[in-house]
Length: 388
Image 1 (cartoon, helix red, strand yellow):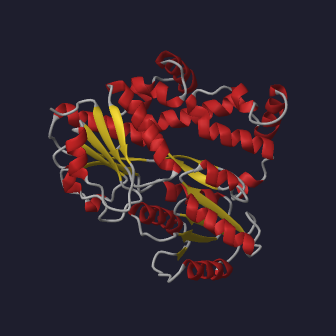
Image 2: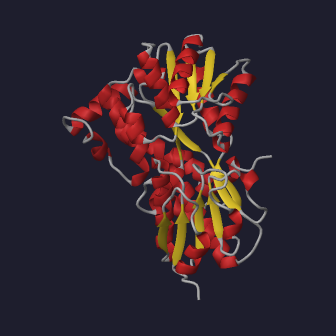
Image 3: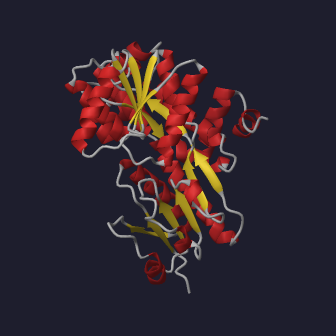
């Protein structure tokens, strides 16, 4: 018999985003009493059939965002309920279920941010691999710019480089050639830090001459970049949770029509690599970054204040002076942003939203939502979603 309490979790990515996705998967698994067995990426293809025979899993979660095109053969998973995460839909069979990043999120968010500053020159940078999510981000970025009559230079999409040194030299020449000031969107945080490093070597002022936005909001990369990197935060944790919810449906209902969904960008976390983030004092910037990263974990204003030296009262005064509102106001703004994102997902149960967004109880969120919006969450969903 199948081991009904084990889920196999395959992955290819070693980035921070994967840890968030896995965290969401573990959080859902606890609600079903499932045990997650993680299969780490290897140089050779994994022996899926042998692993299936060994663990007899109830289902599989297969993360593919960093894979080579032939690393996972989808047919190896046809006999077991499976959800693919971050896999190019064009490479999947008709029976496959998946959850992927929205093609319309990060690129549009970055373009709108740059346009607000009055920048007229734009570029998109990729480090290669030609991943579908990278192409989607570029397409969204260029689409918004095109609507405003703007063009976009692209580095790394069509070029081939014989060595890393050749890539580096080409990037230097590319950055030199861009009309300044220029807004650069990178396919992810790694590519964004690559741009920042080369711009610094060229002594191009950041963000006055070049502004840079990454994607994924990987804290170690973003916070340790110089200057700190502005990045678009994708809802990886919710993606992992939702992937397991879909898997649970497949396990409970047996073979059915595949479930295929996307998840979007939560917010842009502004730091020193963009003009909007550069004028904030380091103390307040650190508090804002902490809020954006942890608001939905149930933290308090006091938790935020302890991230900087000095008293809670002094932190509150600095924050109020810089932003015009309190730390708690900012916490609630971020939490309600997340609530709205989840309400726009028709499959998201209302009863589970409080746990995702930092409220201790469902009733506490319902009361706060009613006070803020003047309607219930169900009424807001009806009024704001699925409009023709």
